Image (cartoon, rainbow, N blue to C red; front, top):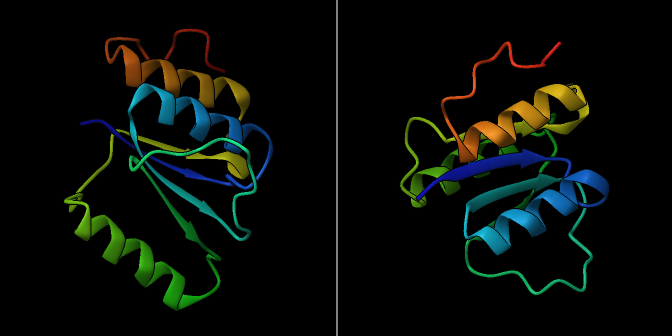
Length: 108
Protein backbone atom coordinates (compact mmCIF):
# COMPACT_ATOMS: atom_id res chain seq x y z
CA UNK A 1 0.00 0.00 0.00
CA UNK A 2 1.31 3.45 -0.89
CA UNK A 3 1.78 5.88 1.98
CA UNK A 4 1.74 9.69 2.00
CA UNK A 5 2.71 12.03 4.82
CA UNK A 6 1.22 15.52 4.45
CA UNK A 7 1.68 18.56 6.66
CA UNK A 8 -0.74 21.46 6.92
CA UNK A 9 -3.90 19.37 6.54
CA UNK A 10 -6.42 21.21 8.70
CA UNK A 11 -7.61 23.39 5.80
CA UNK A 12 -7.05 24.45 2.20
CA UNK A 13 -4.97 22.37 -0.18
CA UNK A 14 -3.82 20.01 2.57
CA UNK A 15 -7.38 19.15 3.56
CA UNK A 16 -8.39 18.61 -0.06
CA UNK A 17 -5.37 16.36 -0.65
CA UNK A 18 -6.19 14.09 2.28
CA UNK A 19 -9.81 13.83 1.07
CA UNK A 20 -8.60 12.85 -2.41
CA UNK A 21 -6.05 10.34 -1.11
CA UNK A 22 -8.68 8.87 1.21
CA UNK A 23 -11.02 8.29 -1.75
CA UNK A 24 -8.12 6.68 -3.64
CA UNK A 25 -7.32 4.35 -0.73
CA UNK A 26 -3.84 5.79 -0.18
CA UNK A 27 -2.67 5.36 3.41
CA UNK A 28 -2.08 8.89 4.68
CA UNK A 29 -0.54 10.40 7.78
CA UNK A 30 -2.04 13.85 8.21
CA UNK A 31 -0.16 16.44 10.30
CA UNK A 32 -1.42 19.82 11.46
CA UNK A 33 -1.52 21.93 14.60
CA UNK A 34 -5.33 21.96 14.48
CA UNK A 35 -7.93 19.22 14.29
CA UNK A 36 -9.46 18.41 10.92
CA UNK A 37 -12.90 19.98 10.57
CA UNK A 38 -14.67 18.50 7.55
CA UNK A 39 -17.96 16.94 6.56
CA UNK A 40 -15.98 14.25 4.69
CA UNK A 41 -16.20 10.88 6.41
CA UNK A 42 -12.63 9.56 6.41
CA UNK A 43 -11.81 5.87 6.18
CA UNK A 44 -9.28 3.96 8.24
CA UNK A 45 -6.53 4.78 5.68
CA UNK A 46 -6.17 8.24 7.27
CA UNK A 47 -4.25 8.79 10.49
CA UNK A 48 -4.30 12.37 11.78
CA UNK A 49 -1.78 13.65 14.31
CA UNK A 50 -2.01 17.09 15.90
CA UNK A 51 1.56 18.19 15.37
CA UNK A 52 3.81 21.12 16.20
CA UNK A 53 7.40 20.68 15.06
CA UNK A 54 8.64 22.76 18.00
CA UNK A 55 7.33 20.20 20.51
CA UNK A 56 9.57 17.16 21.03
CA UNK A 57 6.66 14.95 22.17
CA UNK A 58 4.87 15.63 18.85
CA UNK A 59 7.90 14.45 16.90
CA UNK A 60 7.99 11.28 19.01
CA UNK A 61 4.28 10.73 18.19
CA UNK A 62 5.05 10.74 14.46
CA UNK A 63 7.88 8.26 14.86
CA UNK A 64 5.73 5.95 17.01
CA UNK A 65 2.70 6.18 14.70
CA UNK A 66 4.86 5.45 11.66
CA UNK A 67 6.37 2.46 13.42
CA UNK A 68 2.92 1.21 14.46
CA UNK A 69 1.80 1.47 10.81
CA UNK A 70 4.81 -0.52 9.63
CA UNK A 71 6.57 2.44 8.06
CA UNK A 72 10.05 2.14 9.52
CA UNK A 73 12.21 3.69 6.82
CA UNK A 74 10.23 5.69 4.26
CA UNK A 75 6.92 6.67 2.76
CA UNK A 76 5.98 7.04 -0.89
CA UNK A 77 5.14 10.74 -0.75
CA UNK A 78 5.95 13.65 1.56
CA UNK A 79 4.11 16.92 1.01
CA UNK A 80 5.26 19.76 3.22
CA UNK A 81 2.70 22.37 2.21
CA UNK A 82 4.16 25.43 3.88
CA UNK A 83 7.57 24.79 2.31
CA UNK A 84 6.96 23.44 -1.22
CA UNK A 85 6.02 25.23 -4.43
CA UNK A 86 2.88 24.21 -6.28
CA UNK A 87 4.99 22.66 -9.07
CA UNK A 88 6.91 20.55 -6.56
CA UNK A 89 3.67 19.34 -4.94
CA UNK A 90 2.12 18.53 -8.31
CA UNK A 91 5.21 16.59 -9.38
CA UNK A 92 5.23 14.61 -6.14
CA UNK A 93 1.53 13.75 -6.42
CA UNK A 94 1.85 12.66 -10.04
CA UNK A 95 4.89 10.59 -9.10
CA UNK A 96 2.77 8.73 -6.55
CA UNK A 97 0.51 7.56 -9.35
CA UNK A 98 3.21 7.14 -11.99
CA UNK A 99 6.73 6.81 -10.52
CA UNK A 100 8.40 7.17 -13.96
CA UNK A 101 7.77 10.93 -14.17
CA UNK A 102 11.19 12.63 -14.27
CA UNK A 103 11.94 15.41 -11.76
CA UNK A 104 12.62 17.85 -14.61
CA UNK A 105 9.13 17.49 -16.14
CA UNK A 106 7.83 21.03 -15.75
CA UNK A 107 9.09 21.49 -12.22
CA UNK A 108 10.95 24.66 -11.59
